[in-house]
Amino acid sequence: MVCTGNICRSPMAAGLLRHRLPPALQGRVVVNSAGTHALHGHQAEPLAVKTMAAAGIDIRDHRARHITREMVRQADLILAMEQAHLETIQQMLGWNKDHAQLLMNFNPLAHGPEIEDPYTGPLSAYRTCLQTLEPCIEGVIAHLKARLLSVAETDATG
Image 1 (cartoon, rainbow, N blue to C red):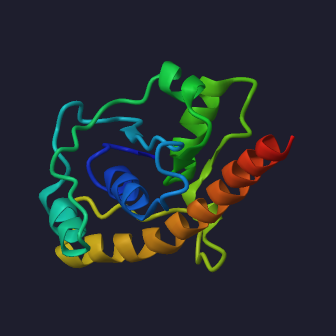
Image 2 (cartoon, one colour; image 1 turned 135 degrees about the horizontal axis):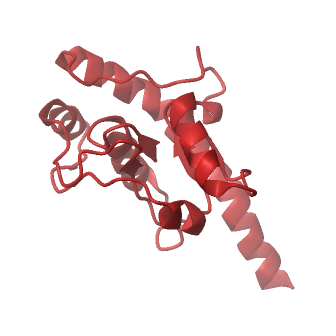
Image 3 (cartoon, rainbow, N blue to C red; image 1 turned 120 degrees about the vertical axis):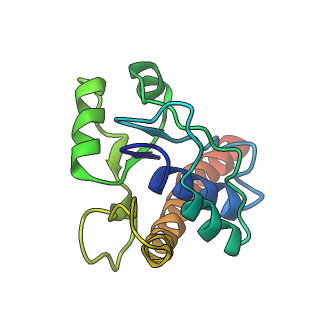
């Protein structure tokens, strides 16, 4: 998960995905987050922590980090919150751009391509962000199930 400062959207999205990951995918999927202009070492925004805690998800231990070429090269799927983040990632990828895309692409009912940044906004902005993230994360889980579980079944049957 990639956003700008790695203190709001991407830690919220990563926390939500970890929380909702079905048992069949746990241990097979590693979820991380980073920022294109990360406030390295900073904790998640207090209102992001509060919003996620209300949803039963603890992101208090999150520490922001800046995305690197190595992270980008090692990831199988990179999900960006905004087009600008996607462009930064694609520049790092160079030739293989297939596994980087906008997180909003996983929401079939999306009203736009980007997930709005709640940073410096009121608590309601963080709640709205979480509401926007939820169907995207469900779409990511469906994608991962189709991709990883069908591969496992194919491998098991030969």
